Image 1: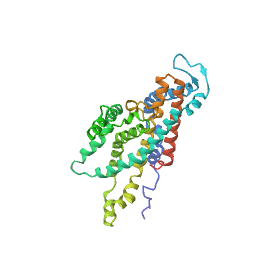
Image 2: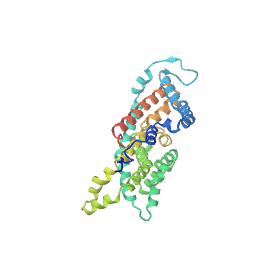
Image 3: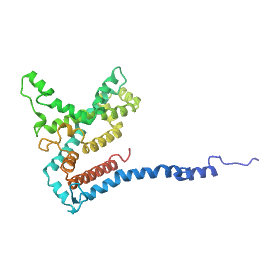
Length: 312
């Protein structure tokens, strides 16, 4: 009579125990790699990120013009002055408006174009390149180009108005219209980036799911509403995250386009920081703007990722 034996997959082994214990990164021989690469990374991050953030928080407590060392301690007075400043209130409003336009116009436009350009048909690559090209263009160059387009004397608006025989609108000189001109440029500049994200997401969707819906008689809207959009959920959330954080940090395109004017009507928080903290040498006030911007960005980033992206 032969001796019964259990399957080898059930019996524990020393090799399996060693594999189980090797879950610790340090047990797999990674300690030398960590000791080699981690300290330089921490050092660079501390020098170029942590220390400047700490200095900005410290300078925000002083009335300081940037010369010498700060001496006049005023506590939270800079923050009080900041939130009583009409230009900063306008900058906050403009940032919120840019976020709304990015979410409600820019991203839906990107999804719509991605739906049309996701198919592998002749000539589609050319259209993808055309729509993505504004994003590749430098922000400063885009601002200068559109400043010429909006120019009421020599720009494209002036030429079109002269051809039509109507008076030329000076869009960038009108404090009520300038912000809408900036919003149009922002949509034009960044929708291509989001479009490429959605094209990549659409190409990862299993075509058999769409084909099954077509066989069942689903309309185009039904396929988009019940299949495509849910499967694009993680891409949509990522796109919104990029749009919100990018809207809060907008600077490079505003300065050559309007410089924050006219009458501070197109200021954002970052352009306000540059205008008052750098050009006017109110370093304490500018540092306070940096602290407020940092708190807003960190709160929105971590809050958004925790609430909407925790499963992505």
